[in-house]
Length: 482
Image (cartoon, rainbow, N blue to C red):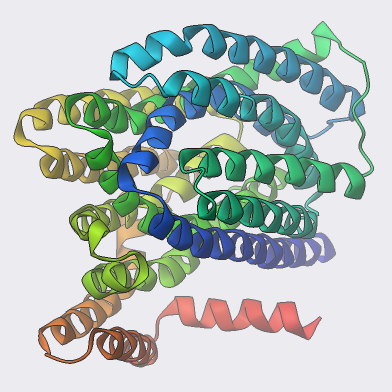
């Protein structure tokens, strides 16, 4: 009983610290991005978007698979961490050299000569990421998530200062490059000081082999997801132009920001927690259900609310030059609604050691997603965005399917548990969106929409007796009552 309570306390505090870290980091980053969006043109953002596609794919090899394997393995020791550290450093250097020498080819593909030097400098973040990945795995294994708060604070503030100064004095796209690299560098420096694990020159093929059987499947799954997620940017950047790509990415970034702040912290805590009770089916089901309800209860009103206030919000925050990103924002809200289902079920499958099943499901999801992308390309960017939303819904069904057998909790049961939350959010959305038709000052309109939205959602939570409200109140009491 004490072990159960101790784990519950660790999960609660872990979510609190992880969410605090995400809110701090993304809050500051969001504020900085608003400033940079006013100082930097959309086409310059588009250049970074093109490069980020290749950086993200490269990062999969150093940030997926073995880090999760270290967390999932129950008897992990320092030798495992040192082995993976050496391996990922070598992989990151190889990937950087590959990008360095292929930069001219990538630049020629997009007809953008500027990309050569930008990619060669920006690519160094891959090496920094390999170091940070092991540090994050160590902290997650120990469930000491408060350390992320301090490392993120240092990286976020330092990168914000560098990015704004460089953008203000006219460095344009280089301000964005410097911001990302400084963030990663400071994150690793703070963690190096804070944690008691330090890298050593130790490597064991036997240790790597034992982690490989689990890690390669997570790596393959991450690679499939990253390639798939960046295919849209790849095609938009090639078929259209960097400005259209920037509008598409900027519209996607707002819902993604919210999702990362809510789903990200919960996901980072629940995976190691689920791994600790991977043999207890009833505990797994209970924790998965709570994760779904809490995540949707907190995430959905932010997404629905953002979709309702999108036009005045974009106009006020980043000016009319970005107004065409509104449609992509609203479509991505629809796609992100299904993320809690995919995330919670995917975490459970990996926590019980079924990374092979996760890989098989991902192959199916990506095949369907690519078919949707290919079919939607002739009809324009908006149709492509809707195709992606349909693909995310299909992905949530796929991720939930195996858990009918693993924990007797299928997709229909999960939807049934989430329906009260959905009803409350639909009511809130309709009322808030209607305020758009009132002819008043745009600042007053946005403030009114936010206030009314919060009030309506709270009233609906009480009248519909939403479980999420009780969970949130209980968890807050545990955090501040200790």
